[in-house]
Length: 352
Ligand code: 1BN
Ligand code: ZN
Image (tube, rainbow, N blue to C red; front, side):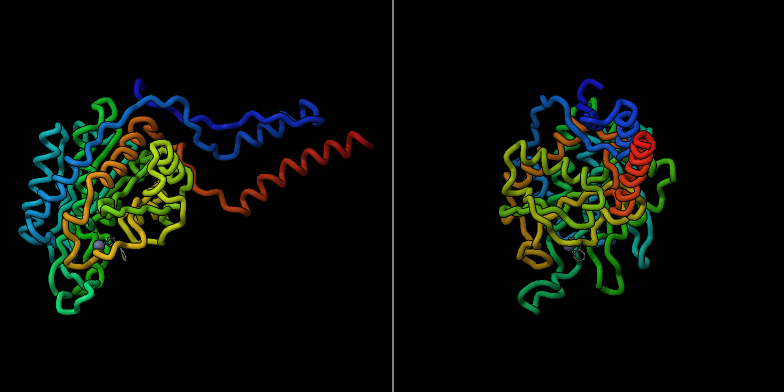
C-alpha cells in the first residue's frame, strides 16, 4: 500500500544474566502480549480546508432545524447525498422506522463493495427542542444544530472531497439519523447508530478496525478531552491524540479525561469494534439551546479536527489487529505469573 505507514509490534528486549533458553521463553511470552502500535515514517501533508467545511455548516443550517422525520432533514439529506456523489462516492440510504417516524442513515462507500476497515461517522439530525436553553420560554423551540449536528457532517463532507482516492476504499462514511432526540416524547438517543450496527454481520464486525465519531467539533473555542467510553481502546485514542500533538493541536486535543458520553460510538463498542468519540467537553454553552448557530463555529477548529482525521486515515490505514482492547489487570497478572513460575522452576532445578 503506497500511502500507508504500518504499525509494528514492539518486542525485542534483552535480559542480562538469563540464559538464551530462558530469554527465548520470555520472548515467546512477550510476543503474546497485544502489540502497541508504533508508527514508522511520516510524510503526508494534510490538505483539509476549514473554510470549505465552515461553508458546509452554513449550507446545512440554511435548511433550518433538522429533527428526525422533518422535511428540513429530508432536504438536508439530499444535499449530503449530492455532495458525496459529486465526489464519486456510492451512496445508500439505510431506512428504518423508530417511534412511527421514518428515519434514514446515509452510507457512503468507494465502489459497490463493502470492504472498508474504517468507519467515520457523525449524526446529521438535530434536537427537536432546545431544552437546555437558559430561557425556559425557548424550551419548545428546535435547535439549529450548527455545532451539534452540522459540524461533524461538515468534516465528513470535506474529507469526502480531500481524501486521496487510493485510501477511499478503506473508508465508509456514515451519517446517522435519530441521534439527538433522547428524553423527548418517549424517544431514546443514538437510534441511527444502533440500527446501523444491528445490521452488520459477524464477519463485517470482525473486519472493522476502527470507528471514529465526530460530534460537536466546530465551536470556535473547541476543546476535545479524551472521552471515557473510548478509553476501552486506548491505542486508537492515543494514536489520534499523538497525531494532534504532532501537528501542534494540543490546545484542542487536550491530554485530559473528558466525560463518559452516550453517543453514536456506543453501539460499536458494544459490538467490540474499536471506536473513539471526538466530542467537545464540557459541552459548550450553546449545547441544546437556540444559540447553537454557525457564527459560534470556526474554520480553524474544523480544520484542526479534519486534518487530524485525514492524517489518521491516510497514514495509518488500520487493520483489525491494530487497536487492541485494554488488557484487564487480572489477565496481565496471569500472563506475567506463568512465565515467572516456569523460569523459577528451571532456575531452582539447576541449583539442585
Ligand atoms: C451529543 C450531542 N449527545 C447529544 N448531543 C449525546 C448525549 C446524550 C449527551 C445524552 C448527553 C446526554
Ligand atoms: Zn445534541
